[in-house]
Amino acid sequence: MTAHFITAACFRQTGYSGNHPLAIPRVGTVERLCAALDWFGPRHSPLECLPASRAEIARFHTPDYLDAIRRAEAQAGASAEDRARYHIGTLENPVFKGLWHRAAVSVGGAILAARLAHQGAVAFHPGGGTHHGLRDRASGFCFLNDPVFAILTLLDLGRTRVLYVDLDAHHGDGVEIAFAEDPRVMTLSLHETGRWPFTGRIGDQGPGRCNLPLPPRLNDCEFEAVIHRAALPVAREFAPDAVVITVGADALKGDPLSSLAVTNSRLWAATEAFCALAPARVVLGGGGYNPWTLGRAWAGLWARLSDQAIPTGLPREARAVLASLDCDLVEEEDRDPDWFRTLVDPENPGPVRRETEALIAAVTGETAGRRTAWATG
Image (cartoon, rainbow, N blue to C red; front, side):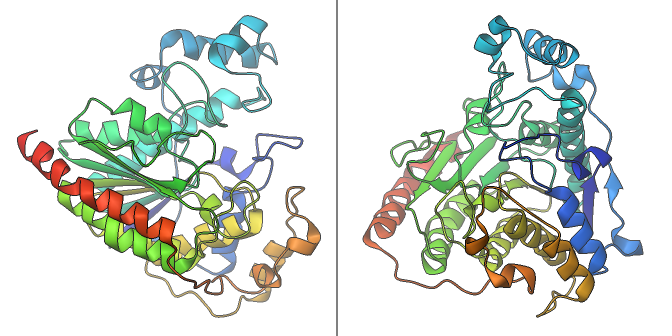
């Protein structure tokens, strides 16, 4: 299949600073790894995206909220009123130079990805995946919600059943809320139970949404069981003609902001399985706060999406990229040697625990009701 890698200069910088979890090299690391592995050839040259216009962004986000973001950036900080009302200028959602441009470019990349996907390609936008952003306020490090714009663009282009899959360790609440009343969109979120934002519980199911809260320390066998016995059957029942997938790297073993233990090859396989369900495919980034696991996962994902071979061991140039990274959230003694010499994580097998089986059974039992609702919707 034709694959496009979407990026922009601002994503090669961290934007965030200090001890913020996003003050690590993310997309820049992915690009450097892909370049070192010669995965950006003539057929796969990265596409630079432009920022979305204010008018485009105002289609979803409220004008007063957009004014508050611009005002806070111009003043190098949010007023007490704006901080309370819009949740900007907080430790979670800090104001920084270039904030508006970075957020607008993320939306622009999502729109471009959707247009390319509609033409039959798979479009990978690792700078996207800001799935917590709400219509009128920031949330969870997310100011604007670019997955929403990818979905809206696909609907504008004539797609009638868009499946949104969220593989981030944190519930994709912003996207679920945005399309709660739209029968053309199904949101399917796999996330760690008991983790911020503490939504997407097992009982939170419906015709247009499916939530799979995963137990901590989820191993590869459990992840595959949930994907193949619960998530994919639900997705197939919806019969999408387009898919948008947020592939957060925080579901991986070693991430400091979650306790799931999925390996990157399982995350790649799951993404490919959902991509196979529809002819239009958008793949976004998302969370991920360990620069080694994130960089390796998203670089490997690009190789899989663009049908390029992943070497068993990394060449010197790629190892140098990984050796140059640092992260205050990951102690030196916790840095796995494999993160520096190979791209593919060692397998993490284990038993399918009782709580995982219960989750699968609960979601499977909901499928018949969804089928009836979709058929009549």
